[in-house]
Amino acid sequence: MENAAAVLSEESRVLAGVLLLSLVTVETGGLHLLRIVRGRSAVTPFQEKFARAGHAHAAVLLVLALVCQVLADNTAQTGVLDWFSRSGVAVSALLMPGGFFLSSMGAGRTEPNRLIVMVFAGALLLALSLVSLGVGLLVA
Image (tube, rainbow, N blue to C red):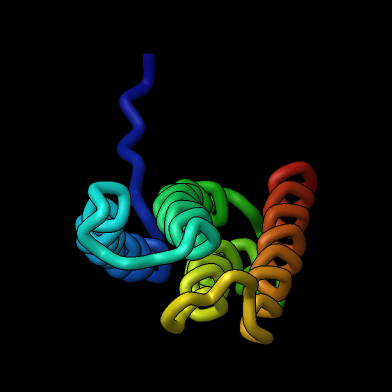
């Protein structure tokens, strides 16, 4: 059995480091969510749902973005396709949760404001990035 060492590209190593540090902010956001569910932060039921959705999307997408680093290193993509495959999910991890949080901010809010468009933009970017990476892996 051959003993192959897994080595990240420089791009993947740097982005993975940033993503891991970003997960600490998600952990901090969890403290805010804990205040909400314990009734220590006055929010509407709508705001609580969006806080939960934003927190969950942030964590899952950051972990997925970490996985994408290793996978992107195994494609032959360059240029825009490489950017989508390597960084698109990470940017989605900013857009989608940001949309949940920012569109529900404000005392007594019961429906999202116009910043909900960030959720949809993030979802589109996520889909494009996953298709790019999936195709890149299949043709490598």
